[in-house]
Length: 160
Image 1 (tube, rainbow, N blue to C red):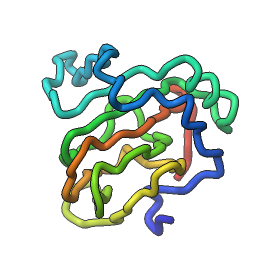
Image 2: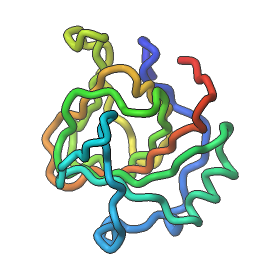
Image 3: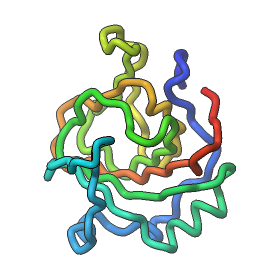
Image 4: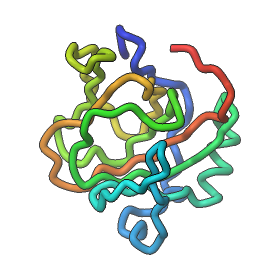
């Protein structure tokens, strides 16, 4: 999958569709308040994170080879700017809807100049991402990007 240790496909079964809360119902849930390291709140109405429903969380805990800290839904109405994830270096993502065609995640070196990888993730597959590496989501998005993101238990070291 990746030649630069940014992404790996992982052998975890596809999530049963009946466990996934439909995108149309996300607006009935309260989004997670996203905070910077200094405690200030991100104001991004185009990017929302929701805590997973218990049925999905239970299924993931049962099928994952790691201890799970968080299971969340992520909805993004447009591409995501260059960043590294706060509070985690590793994420397991499951793309439900890419949000368009030719939507790719680009990974860059630490100074955010050299492109290391450009990956178009497939839907309904699990990927392990090195989210401590600068990355962004680019492409022509025509609808919300919708995915499940799993954060491994804190304090465990994951090698890429």
